[in-house]
Image (cartoon, rainbow, N blue to C red):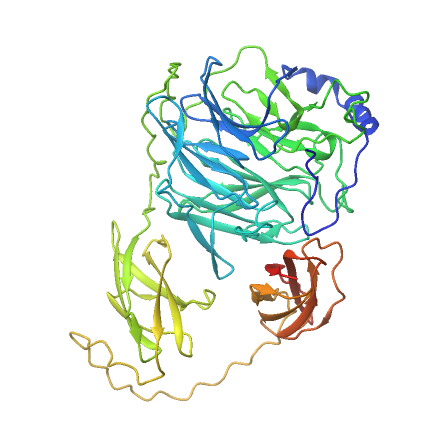
Length: 604
């Protein structure tokens, strides 16, 4: 089955003919390509995304030729011997534990993230007790069900919830966000958001998030964007979060109309990305059916066409359809497996040994038919400063309450001390300021009666933050607040001494408004009869939200900008089934928010 090139909230990339690909090959610098020793060979099976573990076993997801959802996990020993081939329906990407004792398998589009554990026979069986971790993004708690995933040499999991994620029933997470979890499922970092501009960075700077890859030591995290045809690199900071470092590929000058470019250093719809064991970065150019190799700093090293050689014309399939190469996998030998094309770039010459990560010795591969579990490397040593996050072990609130003011009993620990705490209502976007930590805190729930929720998070003096916990209560009435928590030893408040009235300082004239508005939420019915649906849009700005626009889940064209209203109606894409709407707002200065996406089920 042919995979469509684009399923995103913008128009498709311009198709590039097989002749254009051939011209691209002739135009590549001969000397630069000759410096790399790779040979394009048939691979046979359609194996797509994957990566090796720290013992140099390689893991890839393979597809049945006729049934796309009939997927398999393939595991190869360092000597190339296949040691496992396990049916895993709906799988698209795999990321192993450092010792291969378990693997994460992702699918996107209705196929949730799963965990499979290695058995005594060397095969893998699903751990049905394991559930995908969740994280809070844009005020909503969402599951980590991205289509593309990766792990580093310490077992941390990285999930990209972007393209082909959340457009089918049961998986509504279309956040275009990146989330990092430790092996226990604790959230270590979350960033991203959809934005159809050339903006870079952590906040709302992904125009159709595609692939994700990470260096073995976790220091460098890479993402691709299908419509901006570029790579963004994020570098790990001392607290374990990531900061934008650089970008390469296309930009507003080289590709202003976002058609994708088939030439060295440029990209064309890069759906996937991988890092080889030596730290070099590989990207696909899906529209051109070729792959490219860059250094960690974006220096171009190598490009190769990876298409079907049996076709009558390069880049064209025998049935006349244009060929694509969406996915990529790099094994422990540095060979590059070219997705749907059944080809592999085999690395030649003397293959260097794997470099050690963070001064840890490189694990020695043990090519046995049934691999035994090996040790998981320890965390990256940080010579200076407290980098251990506190642990929020839990908190309790009354099961029911007659007042919106409640007492929250918090149980948290830290290697030094828990310093501050903050809380939010079930809206998730109205956090209090950080306050001195106490075991019991007073908090005001969202107004009204019925189920109400509380988010709690703590941090230490070094700024390390815990995971976020959430509990609910039922407000039965708006009665008087309970008595405040007694203070064991109240400190007397000194009587203030009157001071002279200060002379007011002149207030400087305000500068230009450069703050983007924020779409905090869009409420849409879970089901709807007919294509016209009512929306409740909650948006804020430092000045005022003035205009809004919308588009359906194909988003081939936005509505005109119209005056902002909290209650609006919108005509969905015709037909029954799951349908979606994007909402974007802007202020009087022209600053635009990110686009927020919501879905409903049209029953008739």
